[in-house]
Image (cartoon, rainbow, N blue to C red; front, side, top):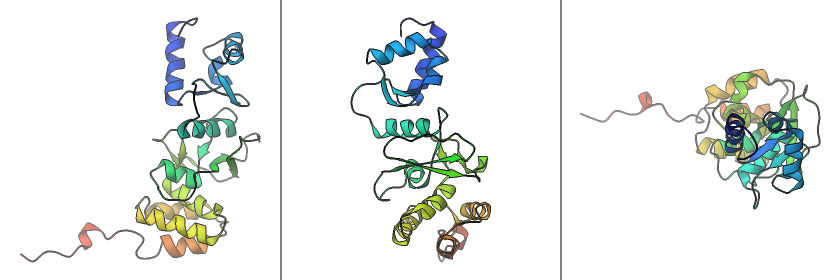
Length: 216
């Protein structure tokens, strides 16, 4: 990168590598002048994807780039958590229906902004650090919180049941992990469906100690 000092260039490159080429105005201004950012946008080097969110790479927008755009746009410059079915997909779930809309979760205290097309923003008063998965980028909720939210946000009971069945089939989360999430979220319209499925016998695989022993 030309026109900036090596330390700033390294920081900018690290942001773009982590975020698949997506960057916010505030992130860019940490290492570039206002004039330099505007020049990159005006000349087409950076594409404006949403208010204050830019894509620095050319070509079609990839799925991962769109997730970053959704997260940064809905989070008002700070990454919002991918949530529900979107988070479950980031954590390995397959066959859970269409990938859109992208679901994100933000605290009610964050300023409200119009999200990009194809992004559905959910707001909550109950979001703790234990609900955040620290190892995934873009950041997302844990599998347990994602499952509870996905079931709650499903358009109908049939869609919710499909999500439950796929999560159980792929063993993404245990009943022990879901139980405290249910305790933190008292107002769930599908609590009975969740407890009757996730907390029922048969959700968790048999433990190794419970397996029958082979005859000597």
